[in-house]
Length: 163
Image 1 (tube, rainbow, N blue to C red):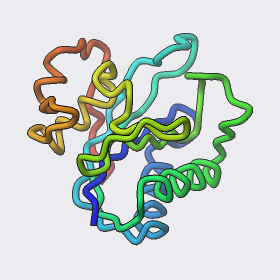
Image 2 (image 1 turned 45 degrees about the horizontal axis):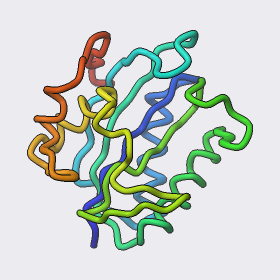
Image 3 (image 1 turned 90 degrees about the vertical axis):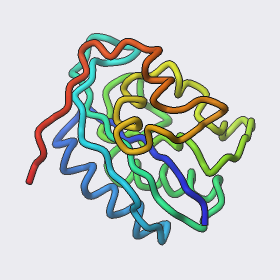
Image 4 (image 1 turned 120 degrees about the horizontal axis):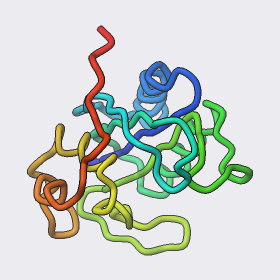
């Protein structure tokens, strides 16, 4: 079994409901155990600024799928929720974005998959929810909480729980 971190994002439609359903799909389709789920956070758009704010969250799962099979499954789930990776604007609006952040301590640098995620330490919208669930996890030699301390978290705020 591998301990895996996945970031969720979206800014089109009922994103929080999409997250709930997507997490159920991730666990079901990968036969994974959900170990932790962060709160949802409202975050400013990245890249293309002329769009709605995003909602971001992170999960930690235990899965026996290899990294490539997991990525394939995550892309399949994104597609199920209306994402069209081939025809979308880079960093533009989307219903669901699922990023494989870390897979155990695996390091990969392939055209289709880089682990850990290459822009993890630049992205407060990933580090904030990640630090909520795994502050002491070391990824590429850096503690998540220490990495978060090095980025601006302006405009990011925790959303109230839905329950």
